[in-house]
Amino acid sequence: MAALVAEHLAEMEPTAPACSRHALSVEQFRDPVVRLWVAEADPLLVGSVALKDLGGGHLELKTMRTSPSVRGSGLGRRLLLHALAEARAVGATRVSLETGSGAVFEPARTLYRSHGFVDCEPFADYRPDPHSTFLTLAL
Image (tube, rainbow, N blue to C red; front, side, top):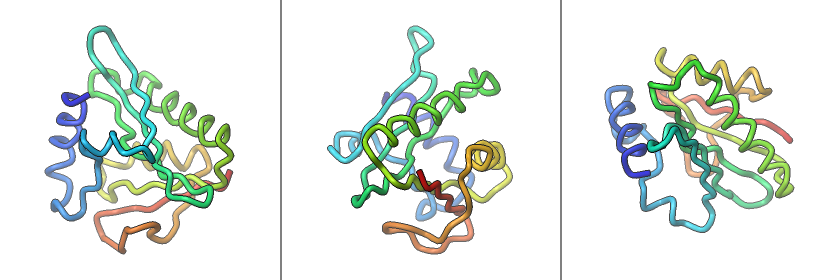
């Protein structure tokens, strides 16, 4: 998992200043409010998705990631659908996320919007940021 997170953080580095990058660290996955799922292509982890419980039935989609080697394979869609099914199974009423606003994040924003996510205001501890796009989905 450390290698997948390191790959993710390295890819995010040129997209925004450090204060505008909100990816979880390996240590943050140990927090009991975070649930993580990974995809393997033996022997490597090639994808991840996590849900962070914000309280009151509101979950945050975190660490939605596919390695470059599997992009375009549909893995991102499968990870997103898995996370949404898990959110519904635990009785969540809303799933929100923060993603980048730059062109490199356009495929991710398109994926989320194709599954019903809509733009929203910053949530939880986020603040307005020109490097961020905030999306939410009522379940």
